[in-house]
Image 1 (tube, rainbow, N blue to C red):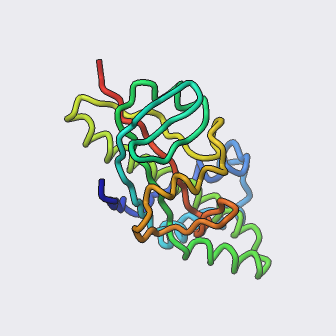
Image 2: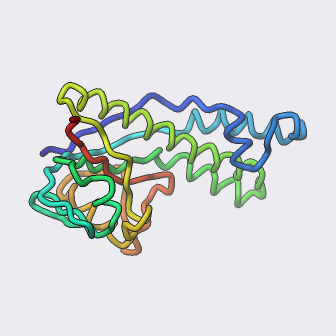
Length: 205
């Protein structure tokens, strides 16, 4: 199957989740300068984040209690596949990123001792990733709904018992395609605000 692309809308972030990310329970608990910094970093994250997905749908050859094998390879290990994909017929593998601009600005702030701002911008970035993944999942769900199928929970290397060391095997699904994310020999993705994983496509009874 060819590699497809999906570009969700730029993120729209709310103040309260950013504050909860930093363990503030209510807005009233937050000092005015901190609140102002949080709002400023939300606006900056919305401006700098450019979410982009590359994804490919592959058939599933086998699901065992210990792992998953895609048609034509690769294979992945972990009991999570038997738990969540036992009836799946296909897997949608993906990599996504918010682009390099957000990472670069966080680094500049940290180097310039703007540590509070860097912290809030980093938190906003991870929440922007969550929003983008929700939009991507909705995009996939709309496609599979017409096929009388549903999506599994998202699984990813390093999540549950799927080893992070199998990140390269997931990336091999996209061999020969230009991706918005690079992978190091230590399974680290660049830009940092990136994510990978797969969804199983499961027939509805």
